[in-house]
Image (cartoon, rainbow over all chains, first blue to last red; front, side):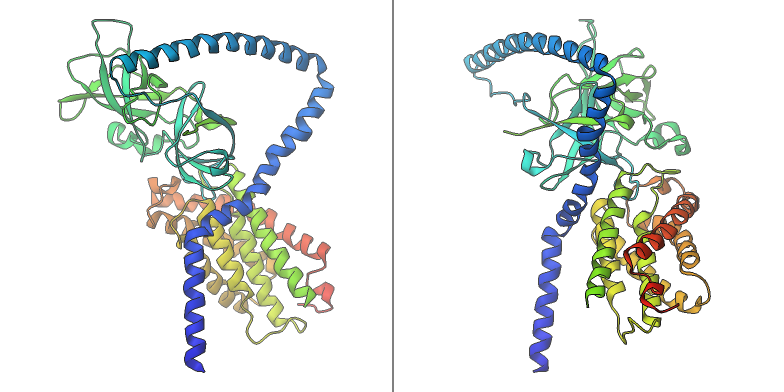
Length: 280
Length: 180
């Protein structure tokens, strides 16, 4: 009798632990999601309509501007589609493998930064696996790269920001000078300590500088140069803006490469909506 | 029976709402207001008071353990912490609070909870750092002491508010005819 009860207790405990490991985290996040999303719902369904009632002229002007922009984008889209088709045909003719499709993006509201404890370099967004978001998807805004999805639940996703010390992005220095050639490097987040010594200068949730490393030591890159994604690795689309060089790149401590500080182009502290790449 | 069910539902709902509020909150000195911890401490101190009262007296009352586990699991999930990090801490704090709140029998629940929150929050930030999660505290262990500020402010708001809501819902001990 006692053995039977002990067996049942152990089986129950193991089942509960297994269920928690498989579904627990996701279930906890999904439980909180309706409350978090309530704020967005309230803003969209109550605040915005009330604002529109009190500012009808401004809403009308905004509508006209957006309609004009939409028409312009429709025309641009036709041009882009033709170019894409042409590119696909040419790649086929040259026996090149097809390039990754970066045309499908999902707009998603930002639910919160830093999780429940204020962990640096992460945020939660309100779109998940049910909307086609998957782990590893690129997250961007029109101003630049934001980060990468690291955890997904049915309705939410956790995004690791580019300022996080665990994220690396292959990059290029953009230049219109043909003599300049192609200069590639790697952008690191959260690397202020090694480059600038004093970590106390870091201010969380403000624009944290990134560091670009492994640049060719023979090329002196001017300040304000645009740092864009190289497209290597296939996570981020090629040529997408990461940020700008703050100052001229300097030789690193080994003297074999150059490195410099980069300010992210996207205002990571003030994002309300982001775009997540949907894998087809 | 009904009262017990309402109490559990009220506590679980409080923890869920506090988790959402903490996730959405902006940090003070890089540390988010510890709303989940505050609500959990309030619930645990209430369970001690319940045990002392005549109405809800039980020889063994494990409701506090259930709330501590739920709150810890919620913090782990929402904070993207390693599984067991917050659960472990919340269990230790719950046991510590249960022991000390019996000692601090004469002090009010609000004051006991506020003190526990102010002490527990810096320790929790250090605990998280030990588990290898990068937070504002990672820069210097002394920064954990700054957690006292958001903890104190949170305590000022959460404990009186919870007591007021509890009274409004009819779950406080006095409304059940027993003066703690």
